[in-house]
Image 1 (cartoon, helix red, strand yellow):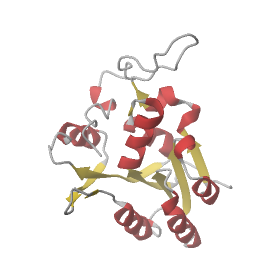
Image 2 (cartoon, helix red, strand yellow):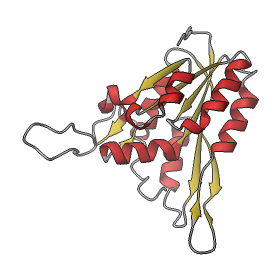
Image 3 (cartoon, rainbow, N blue to C red):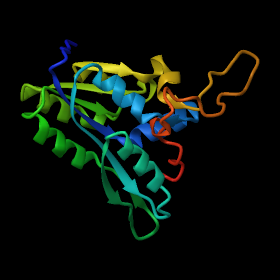
Image 4 (cartoon, rainbow, N blue to C red):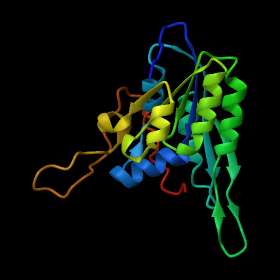
Length: 202
């Protein structure tokens, strides 16, 4: 994979919120610090847009989470949870994220997709064919090997979970504890800690 990064590079970051939330919950029983994810994805480059794709739950308890994302400068796109006859539920933004990536391909130099979902491989290949660099950031252990191979660069959040997770403590020898209290943020601005109200998300 060949990747180019420079300060004048225009970047769009598209966040598959459900995918990242579930990966953190299943792998680490922790919540994601979305501010740190965006910071790592962007580096020293110019952020043109950062979009989080989320689903409205039945309870509506995700509102504090949405507000925290907005304080970080992340645009939120929402859709309602679909409940079908028999109780089946559907909630994904795959098509919406893909359409936005295609629209942005000629307006930015690089698109970073925050996901490990292999369903995005055709999207990655298409956007790259349009001359736009495509990168991904996610937890490597829950990410598609095909996606990691397809993108120009992949940032593995498993390499530094302390940076990207809230309330995570590695399991120590002889201890079954895998998590602790919320970690201290980098600044006094508590909006930097995002994800504390996501337990109700699918």
